[in-house]
Image (cartoon, rainbow over all chains, first blue to last red; front, side, top):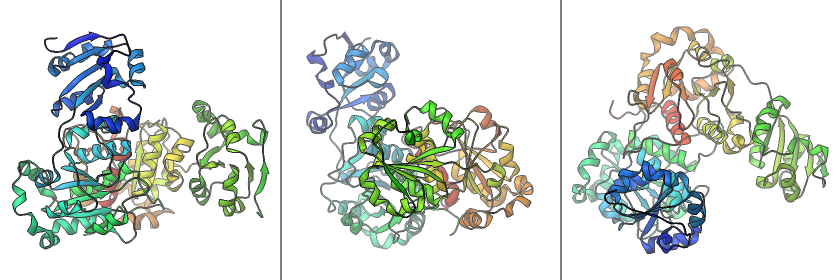
Length: 309
Length: 309
């Protein structure tokens, strides 16, 4: 252990454990975490992904069996490691510590929306998604299926809340995100960067998702939004992202998703360029948010179907 | 109330409530439910869907506020209705009764795989999925996205178990399913009906899902499996299903999915015609089972992407 500092802690009131106390109080953490600039990563895999993404580690709370398994990570992290019994971990945090490993990580300033948008071609825009499980699910789908970034309305929940981090399997570290300054006014930042806003809705007036993607990628969108985009396209990430998504067409597409149940608000729908829906069969009228996000992200990154064209 | 028989029940040991007792004992219900030929539908919407699908109702357990809201359904069902307090409902069932309405429904004999396959063009084949939530999620995605049927390996869990019914939002009633007699031997029924078996796997040797669908629907599969299919295609459901999926190509495709975590077994993979994978980005190596099923069902029913062809 050249770098990590291992200490065995046996008192749940030990002040070195302050980052880990009473994690189940959602309201409190929501308030405190951004202010104190920390978040929790849980389980070896997720902690590793947080470090890989460049987040600084403040400390780890490990049960003894994980000290050996995570030796390389302890060495690399250069942060205090508090070794505690599973019982003490539960007493301190207020819940059963999944996989016996928790890390308190430091936050970093969020990028602004403009710089994220400059280097992206496919983004997700979330409105008022304040369920932490759903935020995590959407990030996992969006990252896996090749979206470039996520934009959050001001009232979306924190993607780095413990539950979101866990459900996303660390995808919240892999996919860059920013918060829009206003709603729906902040959407002008997205359209100003040349993105076409596709609002996902079950409304019968919406067009088939695949048709909307085909329309946008066939160049029909070039005239309307193309002009605003000229200068912004040379950003730092433009090269890498452009290459990955180039085959899905030149248009820049933003997929707007609302909260499970309520969906997008009227004002968000009014701001969209197109309402799109996933065609459904067998009398089923909806998918859960993870499944709907997965289908829509797949359609946007893989391009429209060849059939029926 | 012309048909329904309403009785107020105040004793949790009342023998008329026998169908509803101790519902939380999963192992017991797994054993008992198929043998006794009943299953539980929970909440007005799901109960309505079960009736619409033609399942006979044995009885309902309702809290008073639902008696009025469900008056038409009570009249239509022609079954005893036991009106109980929320507290009694919980005492009898052992859990909080979601939306104050439970129905004990009679099962019907499952169709055999051959008759289901005769009228289908896109099916899901599940291997050893024994998590009730995942079974329900897969049915919801498969039904919504236009698959025609589900085939279960002998060791898959019961789609009519309470939790599966609830998670599926009633899709287990909308999408016909059958159980294969053996595994993986039963897959010869599927290939014998002219289906190409596409096994979903993260294996790097697998081909891109969209490429496999394009290959199959472009007619490359016609020679290999087309012959066996001639006579079977005129089944009872052929017209309706054929029309709905016709635009996605003439090939018959079966999507094989394994359990979350383990995935398909080696022997299932060995029996497949093609291994297919969902391309992933940002270092994410998997999707949850509902998201993966949704993407794969969408790709199969919507056809391959036009881009990169």
